[in-house]
Length: 465
Image (cartoon, rainbow, N blue to C red):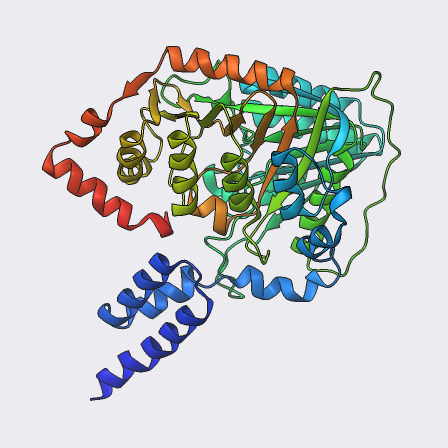
């Protein structure tokens, strides 16, 4: 009897918490089953991985942050609302207008991105803000360490934010390396036993560099030699980062400030704001920042993506390393295909996390049945995250199309309204497609029984991957 009570008491408390706070019914059902049928261990695992402590902790700080964006957006008079459908979707989710006159440049792999990022650091006069999920102290990472330390030596305010889990992708902790060189660095929610701090799932996945409110770099690229041509063939990663100049840069700096303030757990104290420097002629891109994280009351990225997909009239192009979309996004993609929109999804043929490919098969076979083109691109592993709609809209940033990015991580996305940027990224995507393998519905459905069972089991774990 004692052991029954010892099981039922924590299980009952855990199930109550699940019912009250879990919005995803599949995840809620999974946790309830685990608590009921895995005695003692189920509630412990839920405590470690299932509770969104970030949202609980954020309540005290949210009073100091910006107000409720949705309420502000809905309060705007209709005559002031954006006219194009994609503009309206992001406006309602973020409450922010588009900033016009930005320069946006795609940088392919570390071979293009890192030299420009290092040059910007060398040219810094006032302030450098750098956030990265993974920052390895390898050949590429050491170049950043040296340049950041040199900037500190000449009096620049340098701040580096490293994810507390992501830094463990390398044996040597980059935070220790940076501190030894005099660079101010903080770790985002590092897990530790003493004192207890358990934040395994809730990671800061943003990759961002802002220099002097003048130039910014953002996207999906970490700092590692794996992104460079000289990386070993087995480890090499293909990716795209983006350089921004113009009015969007202060918004990106403000996002870093919020993360810095949150990690430091101190009341609002704005960073010194360096003056904007002239960027030369005005750029042709309109941009809007869409930030999301588990401290938000709405799923900003997921809502934005589903909304803009629903506005497509000609084509939708998705490139992502991990594809575990929500039912809402799947429905939006199928609906677009049914009304004659050409929908293409480009995925890596060989994934660095094989179970992510396995889990995606159930949604891929469903999408291919409705005429959506599924492409597997050959190695190297592609870490690129990109959405292009029609001829004038792109969505870039750090988020993958999976529950971890869209529900559990702190992510950033940038809407880019530019025909020229769209055309360049589409050309890059078409080059990838020409080298990729088109997967037919028949190929996906002809998997062996064992493979289908493996994929189905992986798909059951989708809410937790």
